[in-house]
Image 1 (tube, rainbow, N blue to C red):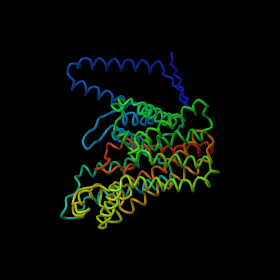
Image 2: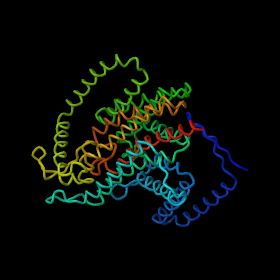
Image 3: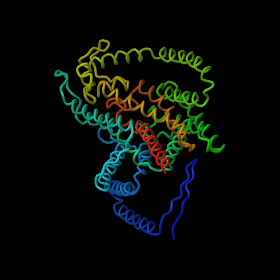
Length: 463
């Protein structure tokens, strides 16, 4: 007898059927696992090793059968698993590494052909991946013979953040072939985010011990936690009134937590606010002519206030940018390699000090690590994502897909600003670091999801 389960959440509706044989195998496997763990219960180290082994083998089996489930493991691991290994490597990075390995092996061994989505966005991403590899190799050159270089493991960590973020974009566009998987991931992200912001709003701070700090203390979380649900609220016509009300409450609570409770953290509320304003402008276009002058006036006041309340920080940032650009002059096209400029910085004068520091700017980091070519490729990717989203918003008819495309446009506005403030999008090894990969991977998954929607639309159009 088969077992049927109906999973419903907002616009996600999926029926899952488990065969009698699958249930029998599951019960048998669970019995073996529990018996083995129970036999070693008195030895905690062995118990933990066995538990990790069984969980890992189970996860591997699941991913082989259904690779799209890896995105749920990526989200859950990034949020709830506090594990942090050498250099800050965590569950998010390990999950991506495993997913990429299985994806490549499937193409290499099973399908025996490399099948990538053909698009200008994929092309730009591949070019940037090549630039990252070249930058890693060039990073072994002693650009300043009187200074030490970044340790190789740190360079590899910085490279991994860049390279596997890009691979995630391409992989997502290839793996997610059914819109229901993308819906499930989006609503899980929104639901888990709603639990967190609601607890923060009600001052239930114990929730922080369950949500990893590397995930919650990242501008990308707050940017997309506002852009995605707000876009669904404004543009998804398939939602019921109750669902719209729930999303409205979440958006308001998120804005309250980000803009009122954590107002001092500018990276936490300025990019999401820009995303929200962009989405409102797209939804109520007739008000743009009135809103632009008011936005310019208010925006100017806000910018002046932000700078005035943190004059020293902004001043030192500008000085740091100039010094890092000066360091990068020895290799302006391809950069100094990953993390190297941090070690070259003590050779230069920063307000009378000769110290190690980071630029606190994604764009300056890109020039220093991957050169002008790397910065160009990064901006090219952002342009292609925006162009694709702008094109799809008027082509797709499904409510979720259309709202998703708008959400990418709004989120992109926040991404561009967040990258200016700090290296939130592609973390720098000595600043946000690998721990920040827990949340910095979000935009790359969402960008890949946009490619999936494009491919689904093209298949439906041709059928």
